[in-house]
Image (cartoon, rainbow, N blue to C red; front, side, top):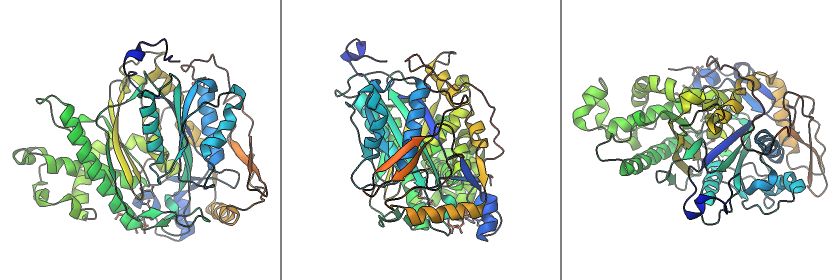
Amino acid sequence: MPSFKNSAECAGWPQDVGILALEVYFPSEYVDQTELEVFDGVSQGKYTIGLGQTKMGFCSDREDINSLCLTVLSRLMERTGVGYENIGRLEVGTETIIDKSKSVKSVLMQLFEDSGNTDIEGIDTTNACYGGTAALINAINWVESSSWDGRYAVVVAGDIAVYATGAARPTGGAGAVAMLVGPHAPLIMERGVRASHMCHVYDFYKPDLSSEYPTVDGKLSIQCYLSALDACYQTFSRKCNATKEASSSPMSLEQLNALLFHSPFCKLVQKSLARLSFNDFLNTPADQVAAKYPGLEAFREKKLEDTYFDKDVEKAFMGYSLPIFQAKTKPSLLIATEVGNMYTPSVYGGLASYISCNTASSLAGKRIALFSYGSGLASTMFSLKISDDDGPDSPLSQLVSSLSNLKARLDSRKKVSPAVFAETMKLRQETHHKAPYTPVGSVDTLFPGTWYLTKVDDMHRRQYERSPLTPTLPAMEVDGAASNYLIKESTSMSTETLPQQV
Ligand code: CAA
């Protein structure tokens, strides 16, 4: 536990501020996208190859945004052993709004009651899928500021992504991520290179407050995503180049060991990586193009803003960047393809996925770029430098160990039929915001330690209980140090279930 008073860091900025620990929660039930193609009567391969999705997690009426965040925060605190009294800031990013006034953060304060700690800054942040990143930036900024009191910050990002029947429905999902933020982190937020792009568009938004479903202009949303990606990468590259020695190589995909993206559907992520290679291509000095991009010279006259849906450019650079995608991005798509779009946690699910299929020694010293996108729109590209210390008890090794069973956890979910999924969506639709209401979904299918909704009373007050913990998810067997992770079992990850490549 860092102590402000005793720390040499009193004299200066805390060092290596970033993510110390990361917990992911996804629902225990999913629908298979191949079966959904048949059920929806669309052509075979549309969801699985066209969108790159394998499975989609979803929640019954037993789970809402409060319960998802209660679950993931409880798990983070139990796994790390950080006492609730040691948290000085708690930020929530979500776009799953069930109350126009009361924050999810305030609901999470129930977990702090026994500790007596009410001195915790931070509330909720909302802008589509970007809220988690805004929350993370707030938390990092707090630790690096004169307001920091030496305690940890926690960021919780969670959402239930559901769409009306139609083309967007297979791009749903649900889940939550909790991140412990502080100094001496294994995943260090790099300073001075964060690049944002924000502007006003109506690509995806939720004007109907009585419905869980968004209003979506699908094609525009893709154009907005890609244009935001271009803008962020250009600014990120410029800032990185400004911090470099004049003699070192300018920013390009070669300078980054991994590239992770917000994933509304996996195919768009592969297209995004291709898009960045097209940016690199356009940034390459003319006399180097033929050597670096043989056969692609004809695209030299193309402009970024004219090519969002240019199939020739897309195909050429998808082909060119395929090995880069395989090495630097595809490992991050495990949760994205198996759970679907989690909205605010999506890019952090990508981070967890990437870590889960690596070892501490293979990660040590690497540099990861992340692109976060929220419709409307708000977007940021930032980079994480991974600590060099990969010793057995290092924070990096503990982080890797804590995520090593991710694939096994995904595999332990229960598959339900598309008909049951559709019924569940209908039930959520009909009972959303109903009060009083008693949920009818089974609690037996929930993962151990899952918080669930038991009742909404006639004043819309929500009550929750937690499913029992089992020996596979022990609680509180900790010594109060942030270095004590509990789930140690290791599972090798297969990439067979990841999306098809072109
Ligand atoms: N086999 C293989 N591929 C197939 C196929 C088949 N049988 N049938 C169709 N396809 C391919 C299509 O060719 C297309 O691929 P390309 O784009 O590479 O050409 C792909 O499947 C999608 O098909 P459509 O173009 O027909 O698109 P659609 O009508 O199914 O809609 C969508 C797709 C617009 C993404 C829709 O699902 C949607 O609106 N989703 C929600 C919005 C969204 O996710 N937007 C992404 C950016 S916004 C964002 O990132 C924020 C956020 O999280 C929401």
